[in-house]
Length: 411
Ligand code: PLP
Image (cartoon, rainbow, N blue to C red; front, top):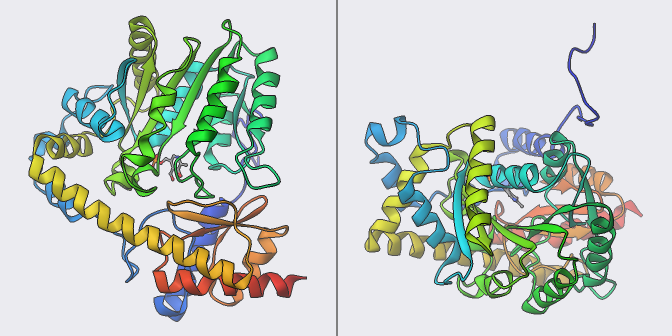
């Protein structure tokens, strides 16, 4: 007997590409030392010395938690104080006009999983952009759904509203429900943020969807707090809070990056519903799903986030620390772009966040070539992903010419 598992149509690779690449990078670091290796595989923010950057104010609060605040179960949909606090974190100063409901989840992953489970049917296709976070496909597959991609950019490098329109129309012809996932601002893997014009385009397309079709518009904002000026990057709420009644915007807001809480598994799904009934149903159905999947989300990070928002000084401290980290990250992205322009290295349109993507025809071969120079990136389908979050500014400046040279060697 070689296999006991029921695959149920899922393609399960022997090795995860991301973990394989980061494993190789760690081996090289162990052999040659961190200064001689560029490990741009990791999806977490590291300081210039190569250490995981953890907000000190958050660390202090976490360490100060009394036992009952981390050991006790949290309510399935999250503690009331956390729900109030995370809503403020997600929306900033934006005051929603819609009916809001918040359900806590273990990471943005949990929010996306629940949205797919509860707003689409088995056999449906979930619509997302061509450059997207790989787990969207596996989340869909786990739930017996598929993925449909629209081309994210047109030939001029603009957000491809024409293909978005085409795919929305195509899918809504045959499906009663459609889940659309847009990962912005600071998309993973490209770093692109939809502009307000892009958003008006999205609204125009959604305005044309027949009212008997039900659309869940999932806004995966995992990188929102590292995308740019906090209020500016939240401007799109004015558009998504003003859509027709057959469109349900769901914000997947993750604490993983915002509070440097990657392993603490904390996030929320937030709906902006047209009616109190739809908001109530959102709370009920997603709580039900949570109970049947992970049960209660971890309590400790919820307590910390509640405490931060209950104490003005502490909140100011967290925001100041985060702003410093964000400036460091944005400077790295700019350094990469500047050097890429100098050496003629093409990048996919980028505006901020953890990653930059370089399009290329043979991503695996390019990564192998770079591995020979102790440079480690993530191969994607049509390019390679560079984590500027994990590389110092000095390394971000060196990377473009190293990538360009390796590309030239391949031809
Ligand atoms: N969405 C995107 C685009 C991501 O890159 C990630 C994490 O890397 C997530 C969602 C979910 O993160 P988490 O479940 O850790 O909050």
